[in-house]
Length: 118
Image (cartoon, rainbow, N blue to C red; front, side, top):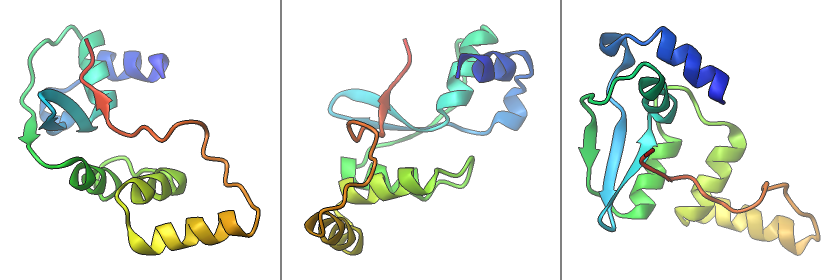
């Protein structure tokens, strides 16, 4: 990921970057969309950039994540997000798969919202 961030930093154009989407909840800022752009800004030595700040519950934040229009999340990202968001059809599917004795490779903890980079 660092190579991609450095490349973004070298080629960073504030106009083309668009607005990162940040959620303020639990007295913290959480990056919903734009993690790579924000990391790229760090490498471009840009310490200020306009962001879109929202203030929504965690479940709604997750929906913003899997419905984002920028770099699309993977199918597994969407599946994990829908489980966290308690999306009924996805929960039924997950429970049916588990009940049948199968395990979906979830790759560790389900963590989708990352705190703002220091």
